[in-house]
Image (tube, rainbow, N blue to C red; front, side):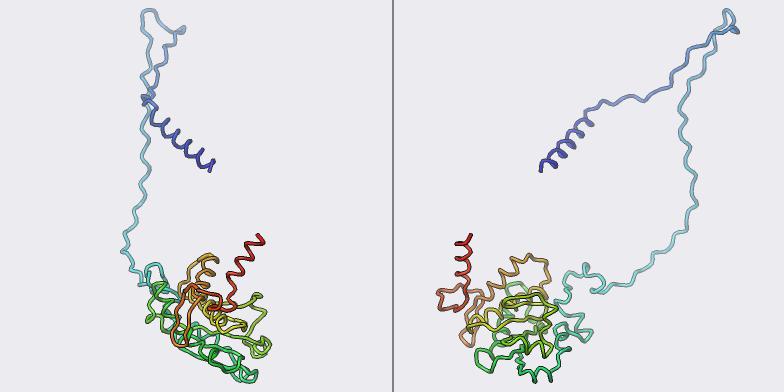
Length: 290
């Protein structure tokens, strides 16, 4: 700050000093005094040399002019070649180019999955409009309804961030809900060497991995948390700080679900409403330990 203050004062002082200088006249050539030598005659005025004038500089030689070429028309650029001229183009958010190419980004994880190995490992596939979920949990209502929960979250994400749910209707994620991670490694669904170690869940663009949780509520919470990450990383594609990404994921993860209707971003009224959520406990422990 001090450095910029000094620079600003120097610039201001220099400007004032330059404006206050008087305008000096142009220098003229002085006439040399006559030289009186032996050859000078009495009564003859010495010859004075005419004043020298600064000759104007000769103009530079004119370069041969090049013939004017007619302007060449450039072919129109597509949105993919110049996204700045097309502000509505988002890659791969609106999926327009990928749909034209017959390839969707969320389909790529499914291409490498061997369903025979998946079934042999005892892993089930649950599918909704916006989520394909692989899990080794046994069939149960609070597990099988997870794609439905995810589908109801999608339009609420779109509404909050100002996106069209109809325009982004093809958007999907692939999730892995793991009770026994070894099954997923054997089936090729858990590339642990490619992922950083994580405690509960981790999202990589259109995929997320999550461990089984001790309550149905916190299982849904973590599903919505990781889904929010995937939504923001793929559709918004904004360079946001981690605290904002985590804050929004926690906000949307805190929800109410009555078995048919989902509401995101609620403030819990009691601990019983959000079993094993544990956020208040973590904040109090962090405050106590400093």
